Image (tube, rainbow, N blue to C red; front, side, top):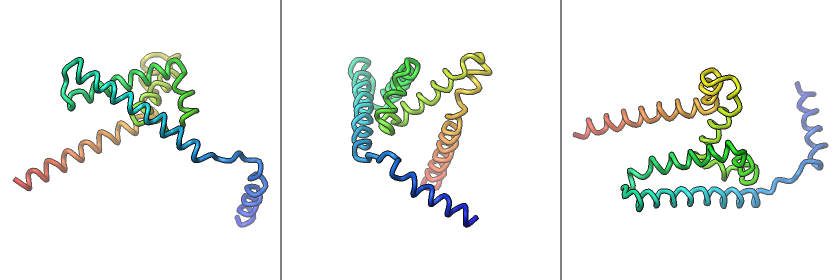
Length: 153
């Protein structure tokens, strides 16, 4: 085992000059700008729902998120979201758009296998854990809130 670690360290030392340098500042700036643009777009969509459809701030949240999911799914379908992700890195994976991209790309990848066994079974393969975690977390937070309110009153 000790020889294996020595070989790994020697290999890492030899290939280091040939590896590209990571540009943390440049990548961070691109992620910040693109993520900010996505969030600004979301705020603009929310403002449209507030003014045109006369919704309140709390009721405008759901259609805003649904619109962002639709836009991300369309961009994924046209192949543009992948290019955006390659350019911006983590900035393109603002939670809602990244989640929509994960589900849509899995659905597109397995569409040839049919609606139920292809799209239906595989589109939540990647995102299923996120959905399960969200449901369980929401249940636990709601239960905790109910217990605290019951104890206080």
